[in-house]
Amino acid sequence: MNNLIFDDIGSYPLPESMTKEWMQKAFSKHSDREKLFQLINDSFQQKIDAGVESPTYPQYQDMNEQFLSIIKDPENTEEPFKVKENAARIVELEAIQPAAQMYMQSHGEKQNTRVCVTGPLEMYLKEFGGTEYTDILYLFAESVDRFLKNSIENSGYLNVSAVSIDEPSIGINPQVMFDDDELIEALRIATRSAHRKGIDVQIHLHSPLHYKIACDTSQINVIGVESAGNPSYLDLIDAKVLDESDSFLRVGIARTDISNLVSVLNDKYGTNVWKDASRLQEIVTELETPDVISKRLEKAYSIFGERIRYVGPDCGLGSWPSQKIAFQLLQNVATGIQIANI
Image (cartoon, rainbow, N blue to C red; front, side, top):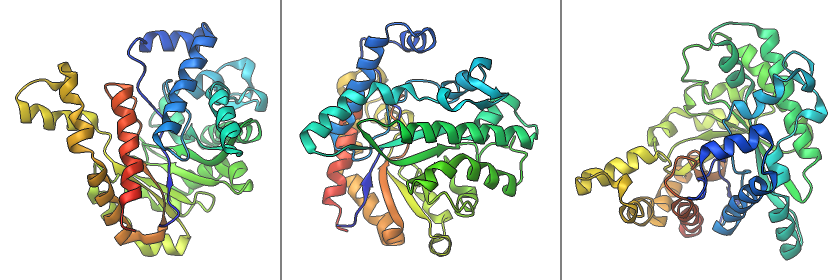
């Protein structure tokens, strides 16, 4: 078996008793910290229990607001959009320390984890839209680097084995006004500390149309492809380009596009399956099964071989109907990797 690493993108459903409104308030007002941390830790533990080898902290905040709320607070910045090193904290990494400590006590080694930070371009677009202030883009990149540096240096019982820059707009958003060289420089600034530590640096793209930007950024060595829901995405990637740039892939082998998966069941039963929890379970018992997942992995491996380093679900599971179904999908991925004939 090839040394594939099973990771996940981050977001995860809330427990049924919890609302997004409560979570948002708990994060923004720093209220019920103990309850908040317990919920985040329990979700991280579920990922470990499901077999995820390098789980990402459970993302329950808006991907932009999680970082912009810190970067835009004058008390936290050295200059506009440049966060102070000691303020560049991901509180979720603190919240999951109990699960990490328990893992270390039972396994004798630190739990590997993947740290995801929203990329400089994504945050820039959120704040400035289709403008072109390169100096500000680079300040966002400096801040991203500080979040990653701080996370690596203060990881506690965790071993940060991979970091990921989340840049869904590259290849999709027509508002992007920067040229490739400017984007490459921003990504280089954002990932320099992680690169110095010898940690795998991923980029999470929603479309691989401009994946060569990542190949040309020497510090990024893993390109994420959402290829379970979009098998044709693999056709856009040239194995020779990966070889020439010594780049690897993170291949999506389980679909996470929940609306489309539910539509399949709606057509099957002629009803709104969202209102019937027993039918929703079929997503993981009939559609995204270990056999289906293993066949996707085998197909991708037949094309790219050992250029595939990470595998897992396409994207986050935050919009999934329940933790139970999300947990089962992760288990199915773990089983699918085991039975894949590679």
